[in-house]
Amino acid sequence: MIKLSPRLQIIYDMVPKCGTVADVGCDHGYLTISLLENHIVNKAIAMDVNKGPLESAKVNVGQANLLDQVSFRLSDGLAKLAEAEADVICICGMGGALIKRILDARLMVAKSAKALILEPQSEYKALREYLVDNGFQFLDESLCTEEGKIYPIMKVTFSGEHTELSDAELEYGPIIIEKSPDLLQSLLEKNKREYTSILNKLESLQGEKVTDPIQHRKAILLNELELIKQVELKRRKSHG
Image 1 (cartoon, helix red, strand yellow):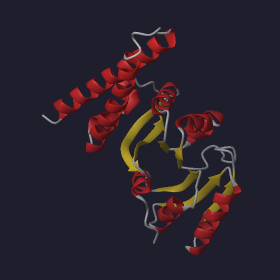
Image 2 (cartoon, helix red, strand yellow):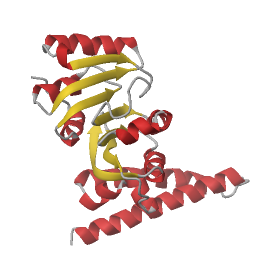
Image 3 (cartoon, one colour):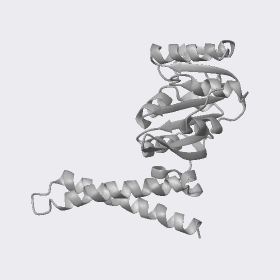
Image 4 (spheres, helix red, strand yellow):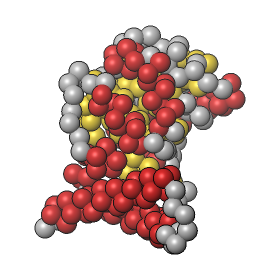
C-alpha cells in the first residue's frame, strides 16, 4: 500500500467514489495508485506533459499490479481527455495561472466532470476568480503545508451559477474561512508579517522621491492587510 504525503492525503480524501479519475500532472502516480488500491475509483487516467513522470508513474503502477486499470497519456493539460470521460479531474501541484490555462484550454471537458480537485501553489485569488466567473461552485476547501509553505486545496463542480464572493473569500477561500482551521491563522500571521515588512520598507522611502509604482504597491499591501483583518475578525466571531 502506498503511504501518501499529508498533501496528497487531503487530495485523496476529497475524491468521491466514482468510476474514473483523471490525474493531470500525475508525477509518480502515487495518488492514482492509492485511489485504485482502496477502491475509491475503478479506473484512472494518468496524464503528464513530460515523458519522465509518466514513465515513472507507469513503473510504480506496474509494481502495484494495476496496469489494467490505468490509461497513460502524454498530454498538455486536458488536451487528450474527452468530455465526460472522467468523473473527477485532479490538477495539483502547479501554479494557479497554469491551472487556469489548463482549464481554459479545454473548459467544456472541465465542466463535464462531476468534480475538480485543484491544488494551486500560487495565484490563488486569480484562480478562484476564474472559477467563479465560469460558473463553478466550491464544494470543499482545505489547507496543507509542505516544505514550509501553505497551500489551498479546493474541490469544485460546474453549476452554471455565478457565486458572489468577497475579496477576502477570493484571497483565502470561502470554505477555508468558514472552517477556520489553525493553519489559516498561521497563514494570516505569515502574510501579515511579510506585507508589514515590505510596507515599512516602502514607508522609509518617504523622504526620497516616491514614484507612482511605489504608491500603487503600498495601496495593494494596505488592501491585503485589510483583508487579513476581515478574515481574523470572522475567525474571532466563529470561535466565540
